[in-house]
Each structure stands twice: as C-alpha cells, then as structure tokens.
Length: 415
Image (cartoon, rainbow, N blue to C red; front, side):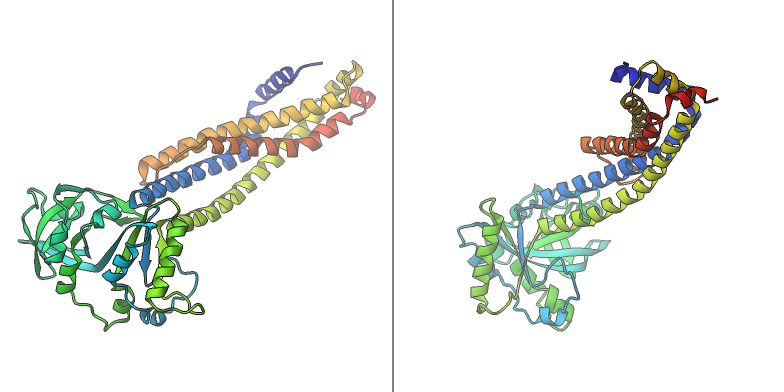
C-alpha cells in the first residue's frame, strides 16, 4: 500500500492535471483565510499599539475622580454634581497609606488659548499639579527643569510645556525662560516635556503644566455650570507601592469613605479609575469584532468547502474505473477513503496557504498606506491552517465515503 507521503504526492499529481479547476475550487477558502489573517493582523497591531500606550501612561496607575471613565447606562450628571469635590488634602491623606508610593492632585482646564508674542494656539489643556506630576504620569522633562516644592508652596508663575506647544509657539528658538500668556495670565517657561505621542487618538503633548496653587489663583473654581461642577475639580493620580493594585484600591476606597463620612449602607461618592479599565474595554470591543470577522469568513469557508465537496464528487465519478481496478488488486475501503480524504485536505490546505500569504500581504499593504499597523502572530497562521484542514475534513468525508463504498465489479464496468 502507498504511504501517507505517496498519497500526498498522488494528490498533488491529480491537482496538477486540473490546475484551473483546483484553483477555482479553493477560491472560497482563499478569500476566507485572507480575510481572517488580514483583519486579525490589523487588530493585533492595534492591540499592541494600545498596550504600549497604556504602558507608557502607566497601566498600574489609579485615578480618583468624581466620575467614572466607563459608563454602561445613562449618566446622571445632576447626581454626580452633588458629590463632594476632591481636594489636595485627599492626596496628602492617601500618601500616608502603606500600599501607596505617591499620590498627586491635578486640576485641569480644557480648550485654553496660549500666546507668545504674535503666535497663538488654541484648544490646549492647562493642568495644575505639583512637583511629582511628571513622575507619576511618566513624563520626562527633556529640557529645562521640573517643579520644586518651593515653586508650589510660593505660588511661582512657572510652567512646563508639552512638545506640541513648544513646536508650534517656539519653532526656531528655545522656550526656556520665555514668558507665555495663558488665558491672559503670564507664566515663565522653565521646562519642556519630551514628546509622548497619543493615547486612543488624543495627543498627550498639547498642554501646559503650572503649579496647582497658581492654577487656583488664575482660574477660581466656577460652580455656575453643570459641566464645571462635575468635571472641573481635582483628580488624584496614585502610583501603588506594590504590584497588588487590588489591595491599593481597597485601601483607597476605605480611606475615602471615612473622609467623606459614608455609612456602610451608602454607595461611593467618588470613582476609582484605572488605565487597565480602558484596555479591558478596548479588548472587549475588538473581541466582538473578532467574532464578527470569523463569522463572515466562515461563510466563505463554507462556500469553499462546498466547492471542494463538489469537485471531489466529480473526481470520484471520473475515477470510478480506477477505483474498481484498485479494489480488484486488493485495495481496502479504508485505503480508498483515506486517499480521497487526503486529497480533500491537501486541496483545502493549499487554499489555506495561499490565503495566509495573501492575508499577510494585504495587512502589510494597509499598514503602508494608512496609520494602522499590522502584526502577524504565529497563532494566526495556525488558525488559518486549522480552518483549512477542518473544511477539508468535513466536506471531504462524504465524497471519500462514496468512493470507498463503490462496488468493484460495477466500478470496473463504468465507462
């Protein structure tokens, strides 16, 4: 009897005899696998990009705020506005927790205008914090210096600008020591942050940082609008001392509930947000997309599988006399079945290999002409092979069993 390698060689010889028919038969599988590989490569590339951005921000950071980043239903802004504002004293109390390395209060103002001489840029964020802001938020002062404790305490009108501000207001000169007008208030630039890029499409470099004590002097808290009462207060960024973020979350929740005088039957009047929450939400969204893509690709694979089944049935009819001769010289039903099943699997795998190659090329092409970055993982290649083999087995069983069940005498008489 012919070995498995002999069966594969015989299958390839059969396909070479009918190249065009074999190619058209595998077209559905090629399209399906190409779609799966290309889209999964792009999703994987996005996942890695987002993971890198989260890591750059600090995936272990905890942010205490009045509102949650992720809301699954209607957000009652009036109820959120009734929550007490967070204050720098809360950060000082949190700093005393044994599970906390450092806590930093930050207050911000969006859509501000900055001006230097005749140059002006708008829609820039102004943040007020202390000397530990850059450490907690993974910013690096590329030129100049960072704040000191004295800068915060003595309310010095100083600022550190992001790379976007530096590039647009000071394209041909150093901004260090220059006076910058922030909403009509003058600050002296003492440093420039190193470029950090984007997070989920939002720039992390279009802002200016000033001492929070100066921020409170320049921009007194307004409680006239609902938006200001909900989003205008302090946010406290916390860097845990250990990798046990859950313990730190529990410690902070217990402390804040005590500080706000909440009984055991009262819900929290603050939110604990983490960067990992955003990453989890993103992965859940892409997981739904993955399922949809697989479902769409499965349609192509089913069409391709039906094509394989039809062509194998045609092959059985064309080779009926050959099957009769093989049985007459001692070939068993099991051997005939395995031969035709091998041909079906090989045909599907050839389509899968072509589809994997086309999918990788398509993903690379999209990466070249767009901001999307593709990343092909080994598990995707295995998935492509697995889909192809499964289609070949499932849709090849019936033709193979039909070939194996032929009566040798009737097969020999077949013209």
